[in-house]
Image (cartoon, rainbow, N blue to C red):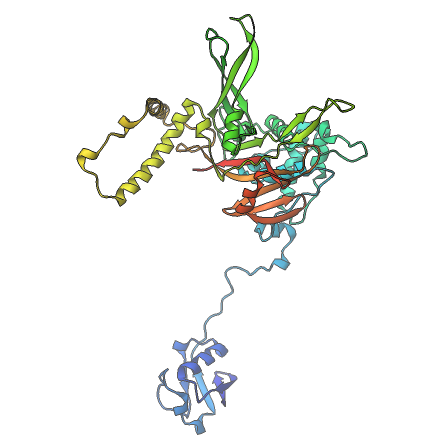
Length: 494
């Protein structure tokens, strides 16, 4: 190693050169690190060599006796400030950290058996259209409980978005308990009683439906619904009643509204689709004018209009009579049977023929894309092997196809529901789950699980928020004392 002085204009720099292993290219790199003069601009002069030096020349070939000083000529690069200022997480406030998404979202503090509420609200937090409707709701606190309920929920979500630390939702809980005294029930020994998450959803939706009347920026036309809750979560059901004791009674049909589907659980139910099918069928007893008495009627329901979001309730709780007990009031029990639920739920089998015709437009279009891709990969069929696809359809499929063609020609294209694309196929993606752990709805613990993106989920256990994966969600089907799905939330997805 040889110590050399580098002189550049009025500046001098100490420079150590490795004569045994270095080349001129290495020397230029050293000089660039000191002066920021680009290699292509460097002009080096010294008594140790003559003329221009090539980069591959070994420094050991130079006259070391004269290698004491090197003069550099050339202008340095202009050092510009970075286009975007570097920000360190320790310099950010809590609200800035929450907005940047560099940490887990804030949790909700349990204010006395409020886990049923915390879990549900964290799940609904991941329905962006629902959040938009709340954000655009105007007004502060007033004497109107329904208004205060809505505005305090809006403000609580805004507070969650602006924090990384868990918050106590005191204002909303106070308004909830004043608006719905059932959620303010006390235990005999003091403290608030555990409540049912499904009953909370019903109270929540019914109240918000009276307040969120105006369309939003994301969904500007909510017709035929008259509020955002019905527009986002409402199903139009087609009810059909048929007397099982006489054919003389005419079949009656009517339209009803619903804000959820119910998965009934029997000894033979293993999958959510089986439970929904059972929940859409049943029998009731009502008067028959032909028979002049009460008769058994078969009741069947079909979906006639779909929403953007679907809530499915697992009918896990039931009332068990206790005739031998002192008060004979019975006890609320829980159905522990495992019921699997998919990541993608196809609701096509539960729809009316009219709605199926609309969905078939998108489904057939998707099938054609798959068939065309398949045809591109296989040898071309002979002319005598080509078959008219419509000739192979069943009579039921042909009728549905004709109805779809008719509806697609009327008013442009028919939509399956508010906010749904014209080519919607009836598939819904799971994005949130409310689970319950325990043997009774009056006890136990509720937790919310929400999909962040793809395979990444978050578990909201009151004020404790932790990450999890899809495989953890699939374990929530029940069958033991572990957390099991009670409410599942799906969003429309092609």
